[in-house]
Amino acid sequence: MLLKLTEELPLNAAIEEVWKLVRDTPRLAGLLPGVENVAALNEQGVEAYAARVTEKVGPFKITMNIEVRVTETMEPSILRAAIKGADSMGLNRITGSMVVALSAAPSGTQVHFEASIEILGKLTMLGAVPIRRKATQAFAEFAQNIQGQFVDSTGSIGSPLV
Image (cartoon, rainbow, N blue to C red):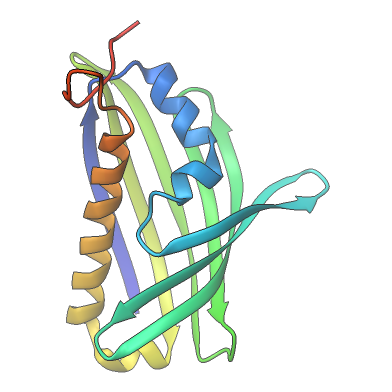
């Protein structure tokens, strides 16, 4: 089952500040619901991270070990990453990619997230509707968590533009 998710996110923050968050993979990944234990993998010449993701989808509670490899960066505008993972028994697997693109906007920075994830295994027995619903909900929560990183001291979303 292939999932394609996109999210547009306007932030009242300078593009350089948003880029700092995007390039802090453990911090950014930690804003995704269910992600924990994000750690850099020590591989020569490759920027890669491992994480554990636990999520409840329908009657299933799935825990997967995920690997994220940064495949391309163009400072301060684009980050591309490859994603793969599986549960401990190999009954559920995911592969895919993610793109984060930043562009200047009148009020700060426009963030475009795009993910293409293929889900394989037992989880697909639930069907497309509940899986898409859960993924869309998680992606929306991820966007809210990112906005929360740019709340200024007055409680407004965003940080002063520099």
